[in-house]
Length: 180
Image (tube, rainbow, N blue to C red; front, side, top):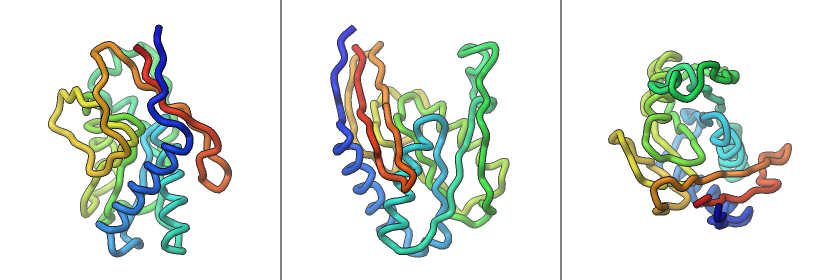
């Protein structure tokens, strides 16, 4: 197996900052904004993104985490015993401008499941998607609104985001690796 580093810790930090600035350009009322990370690594990316946005605007932003395992159309194919994590959305999503955050977008099926899950909480004003990596290969017509890096990888390759955040929401360590 051949591993290649696609992004370093510093690259991840720059991508998060770029995405955060783009979100702020599009959302002029941060009180209507909610950042929701998709488990597993999307939650870490969302945490860093929210920390950057809060530091930039000087006020808190609504946040949440979303487990989509039971919403997946392929959960029975992935595992007979899916590991269910906690969905933690403690704000009213009705009328909010939600940014769903994932680490890697591939087929679009995870995002489809996340859309179903978020709608169980109410009716947002709109939902956008931020992804650290877009690797192409969509099976569904879902595209990120904000993207850290777009990359083409051979079929059968895997992209792993390894990321740890500090208590204040910064990238403590991390890298994005392509496994060929």
